[in-house]
Structure formats: structure tokens, C-alpha cells
Length: 368
Image 1: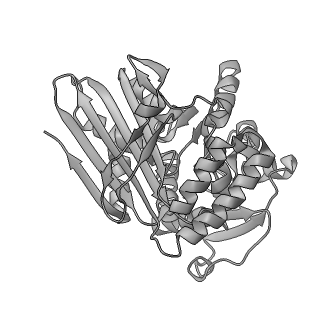
Image 2: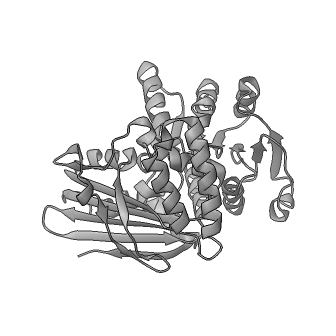
């Protein structure tokens, strides 16, 4: 019998895409839940009883706990992650139910690892398991592991470029991330194995990515996802660049960073609303797109390069969630503990299933 899977935020775009993937791959006991009940799209409404619905407010701890306890896996497709915090994760820990969260980001990771140091986790808690973060760490890992053991990577450079009509929850988390979730590291990179500040004059790059992106200007950032990947493989030099490729969205992001609106919930709310409006205007003339470009250099002088690009960011996130969910509920499963996506699943197997979903618009890997 298939697992009972609860999708919180199930009526949102990512939740619906996750449900579609799971239904297409044999899962037949899904519960879509949200603060308010909504009619299901026709393709899900006619799923012959395989999909049920429920209402829950994550602020109602008792109701949330009961609902989580009635399922074998909880997918937390709700946000903003910075406002939801650890409510869902704590409910899953108390009920010993595995958790899959496309967000969470660094604050949730730190909180859960603090709890884990105090007591063993009874189930796997996989966070940062969507597109960015999520596939953004798994694809570079896939490139590294393709070379096999015995080849030491000495330099990793990643570029993340995307644009879409962002939801308020997505925009809130984007603005929150501009201040490194409170760390305010500024422009930085890992050099000689240590995180170091980088001068403004050296903080930008101009990669060329496949159409419809082309040449862009991206800025140094820091993600704990790639930082952990670098430490795992003992990579001495790690650089991560990011760019919001919608012109109005990019302007709002720069303004929010310069004005330090990421410092308070009120400032984040203000900038997030700007970003929602700006991104909607960008998408009147532009196509949504998201690209990951990674270059791995090895001690023997060889280099592996890879680029992955998708056009539908919400479907890509839902597909990633669906693949991870099926791995969590498989016979082999994933061992208990707190992990990011790239630490929890087999990168090669995951990429094979992601490619089989036929949502990538460009995939290229160059190896010597």
C-alpha cells in the first residue's frame, strides 16, 4: 500500500505540481491542505478518490499535530519560510513523521541541528529540497560525483539565474535572504578553505547562459547549501553567484539590499510586495526561466562544467519535491536526521528521474 502523504500548501502552485507528479507515479493517498479549502483543478478533482482535502492553520498547533500524525510523510509547501519557522518541523518530530520542506533555509537548519544535538531525531527531516535551494546543491554534487573517487576538486563555481512572477511567499524569502537570514556577510567566498569577505570590485561576474537568458551580471552571495557541499568534499575555493534576471525585479532586489529592508519583518513585507508587482510586470514581456551553471576544477588540471535550465520554475520545484518524497517513502528510505536535499538522496538517481520528467529545456555537461 502506498504512503499517506500530506501536502501543506497543497492548493498553491508548487503543492499542486507536487501532487501531479506523485499521482503520475503511483501514489494514491494524498491530502492537500491549506488554511482555506479551495476547489481542485479538474485533473486532480477527477483522480477517483486518490486526493482528499483538509483545512489547517499552522498556528493551530494541536490541529497541525493531529493532521501530521495521520500521515506517513509531510511535505511543507507553505511559506514564507521565515514566518513559518519550525512549527511544522516540530510537529513532525513530536509525531515521528518524516518531513520534506522545499524551504526552511539556514535559520531552520540551525534550529533543527540544535535540537538534534540534544536528542536523536526519530525520522528524516529533509529541508532545502526544492529548486533553489535544493536542485541548486544537488546538480553540482552530481557533477562532482560523476568523476568518481580519487579526483580531488579544488575549485567550485556556481551561478544561479532566474526570473518568474513570484508569489508573496517566494518574494518574502528572497528579500529575507538578501541579508543572509540575519548574518549580513556581504560579498564573500570560500578561499583557502575559509569564508572571506570579497572587495566590491571583485564581487561580480558576467556568465553567458543559454537562451533566453544570455549574458548576465551576477553577484557573489553565500549559501550554506554550497558551503556544506564544499566542506564535505574539502574544496578549498568555492564561489556562488546569483542574479534575478527580470529588470524590474533586479532593481527592487538591489534597492531592498541597499536600504537594508531585510532587517525587519515590516521591511521585508514592504520589499516583498514591491517584488511581487515588479516580477509580474517583468513577466508581461519575458519568459520564466531558471538556470544552474556549475564549474568544478580538479587538482589534476581537468574541469567539469554543467548547465541545467528549466522554463517552469513551479513545476520544476514540484517535480523535485515529488522525486524526493518517493525516495523518502521507498523501502530503502532515508535514515533519520536533519539534512539538505543534496545530503539526503543519491544525486545520480535523482537527476535521472528529474531528466525523465522532461521539464529541462537545456542540459549540458562537459567533461574531459
